[in-house]
Image (cartoon, rainbow, N blue to C red):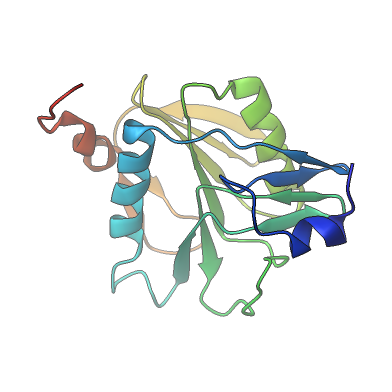
Length: 173
């Protein structure tokens, strides 16, 4: 049990941890597929064509309530949003990539925190099933193909292009 102020002062969590209702909660550590999808999304969403609309930031602390600080894998901050060391202005979009130890039940609690603070939509990429859970407007839908529209801006993300990074040949150990 610690206070939110103590949590924010501490930067020695490895990996970074979240603060939920007066306690520190470990985040699932990403494995290769998780990290590759996160990297692919960063490359796609940090393009010149996107910068007029938003800034794509990985693993940024977001205060969803006074007692909850979440760290989405990626969040898109509106181009006109204030620069905040800990984000309190609702991002345009939060993106999560499932790790093997993540459960959808636990992930949906996180999603509820983001939606509750005013984030219009949350995407959850599942590398095993190769689908995206899209959460927003009171709905949870699954998409396996096509593209995803970033809320409020004319930017689309090809699901096949994101998951294509998993198809490259790799040495496995």
